[in-house]
Image (tube, rainbow, N blue to C red; front, top):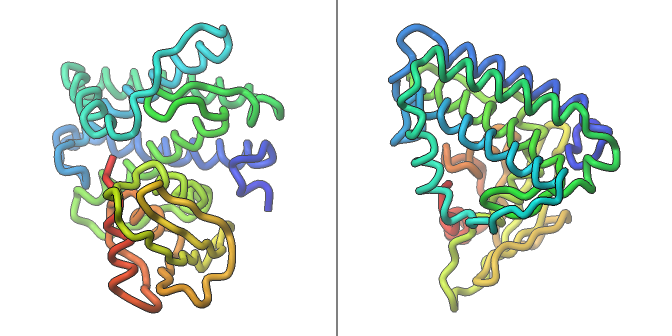
Length: 272
């Protein structure tokens, strides 16, 4: 179903619909009385820091779009390794803002970025290359996907901090599922000389259900869709648990085959 493949223009309206839904949920949580300094699933961040973080990254997207449109030079990407430190600094730099001012600024940023994304045409969706502060040049469709990660996963973080039972929205999880393989490939942490680790991943439900063969080694992570029978281990996920596992929010999944191989694989990544 092309409307669930965010790499295609056919998915644009569906993706933006889900992003807006997740953003509305995030704003309701962030502006609630007493929420501002509440803990979240991110150990060093309170709710105010999640708001500051999304301000920080969204405003960096504007810089990237301006460079893509104007042809102006853009600084070299810092790389995903730098994200742990730099994103923390960027989030906490906004602690000087009050709750009302920070949420209003983020609402304004969100509206501006949604306007940019809504204006993207079929050619620009995949062919407009927008430099990312950490990951370098990326097709424009990545930016509404990043917003879905920002608002969907960080809404989960706020809810998790309350101690109440909850879950990840199914539409958000379905759209993000294919991008979790990209997230893993961008955050591999494998020592030189380590033996490659080959496993299968199967997402058992949702609009992007499927199976992939993955090989992780010193040269990074490679993956391709395919049958996973005969591999040393396969990890099965529903869409929500796949997203939360890839983001390091939970230890989920059902291991079929060699448990040691699967656990070795799951520990080959650094967190951002």
